[in-house]
Image (cartoon, rainbow, N blue to C red; front, side):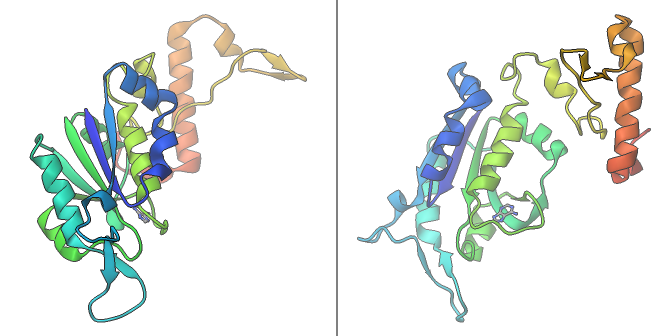
Length: 228
Ligand code: ADE
């Protein structure tokens, strides 16, 4: 998979993509993340990429020309499955969307800034709009990083133990069960007996029950449209 991210502050994301699981995924050749500075596509002497909103009002708007030049440049080199605009008024991001996008080949993420992008960018170039929650960030960069992380860890081979993504919270509309590691006893607090029993089938059943219980307590809404 190749992920291209267009932003006015690409440096904000550099260290994020240079570390941890994402870095391993890139080094192993599973994914390539390329950051683009929108200012490189500006036609103005001062590398301007925004302008005042027509009709007045506070806040600048990202102009269509540099964005169009950048997206067209990328699209002339390869075919993209989606051009995704990160915006608080987009579709709420969730595990289902992450799963779907992890199966794609090439993705463009466009990060908004200031008051957002000229509406014609959304009408002409964007194929999907995503929000990471009902709050407003100062730019789409963190939101794009969140989505990219959730997507990249699902690409086969990126995680060491492939089954570990399958047992994540939300993969089956259930939250993950509690987990424990050594020591088996800490200041009198024991781990559940069953986990020491060595009885694999019973442990699987226990984890499943715990997952259902935790979901009922914390996120009963998830159970509404599941089979449990
Ligand atoms: N840009 C600003 N706020 C955002 C949000 N909540 N989700 C996605 N992109 C954003």
